[in-house]
Amino acid sequence: MSRLTGLLLSAWESGKALIDADYADGARLFGAGMRAGRAELEQLQLRRLRELLRTFFNAGPAPEWLNPHTDALQGYADLSTLPVLTRAGLHELATRYSAYYRDRRDISAYATGGSTGEPVRFLISRRQRNRAAGLRRKLDRLLGWEPGLPRLALWRANLHETGHRDDQPARSHHGWARHFGSQYFGGFCPTTDDYRRFLAAIHRLPRCAIWGYGSALEDCARFLLGTEAALPPGRIATAWNCGEMMYPAQKDTFRQAFGVQPRELYSSRECSGLAAECAAGCLHISPRYLVEAVDPATHLQLPSGKTGLVLVSDLFNDALPLVRYALGDLGAIEWRQCACGLSSWCLTELAGRATTLIKLPAGRKVSTGIFAAIAVHLPDLHQWTVARLAADDFEVRYKGPALSAGRQHELLAMLQHSLIGARISIVRATELPRAPSGKLLPYIDLRPNSAADGNQPDN
Ligand SMILES: [Zn+2]
Image 1 (tube, helix red, strand yellow):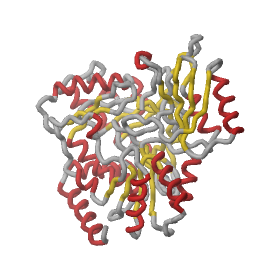
Image 2 (cartoon, rainbow, N blue to C red):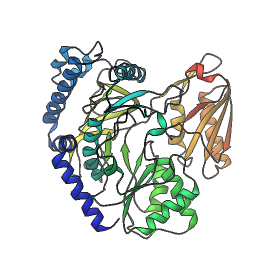
Image 3 (tube, rainbow, N blue to C red):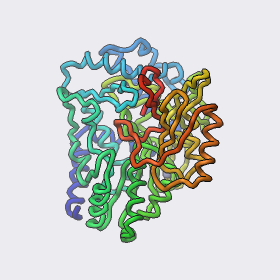
Image 4 (cartoon, rainbow, N blue to C red):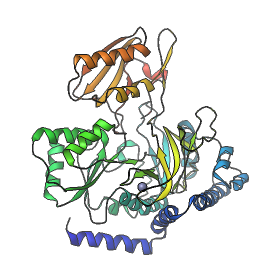
């Protein structure tokens, strides 16, 4: 993209901010939230939440918990008086509101990929998307992007394949701005040919930002290192990983190939752009979200820095009350005065998806969390899946450099310790199974009729 195009884009974006109230509101909330001190942000967010809940209470199929008492929410601690919204709860809520919005052209229904065969439905309004677009550019800046800098992605450009309802299009005014200056390569499962095109595009630009799925970025880095055709230094201004967590070893490979440390953009399909990593390595939470870490059993808020279930309340979703929604991730929340100059709530100890339980034949239950330990203890194992072939037969499939006999032995010992009595094998694979969303699955159940168990983790 030329300098002129960059300037035009900046002018267009600031012009849009001046004339489009929702777009400007999104950007304003981000600005105000990031400038505010802790107490001020708490009041700003709770005031917005109360207004939003009042609107839902006054019209539409309000759920039972949504009563006028939500006006009593005066501090973050008061959120504990509201129930936790589970994935099943969100699905039910979306179905109910969807019927209510039958004739609303500005509201679209979406669904998460869902590896369980039961994707979660959710609703998004045009207004919400416009606000999100205004805020999103600010998050991009946190990630090191600047207006006019081209963005190249190992990613798919839209949600359409996962349940977008075409009879209710809710196009954002800013749809094209969002994609302007962006190029997408290869979707969820890129091929070496996609990597070649991706790298050729980088070569054609003086500077650019790159982002995508962590596993795709790492795979591409490996491909680049294998070609011995290094990129000129300084070509990549910034890079970020999205959609799945990147382990330290994966980040090292990426840095070796592309010359920059990949940052994290923590997001989900239901809540886009929750937190972004700044140059100083802090994962700053967007002021659009009220994020809590709660005890998984009691749902009570945990003290700062304690790891628990991450709950999210979205201040922009005016299609349905997305309040205290459990994304299924574990993490801790801390207020930080960051070296980058921002003071905000930050996500720390992000531990990825909460786990599910595998029932072994002897009645013993084992958490899929044991598979996450694989990544911690064997950092040289980059991409892997544990496949259950029969009740007591498991196969670790991995991609990347061959594991030495010693490392295989270590891995087997680790798994045998938890999967007592089961047969475990290790196989090097060329492809690994992915959820429809493109994420790698840490565990898949390949037994016939396994869906009935509800054993598979959500993506
Ligand atoms: Zn920072």
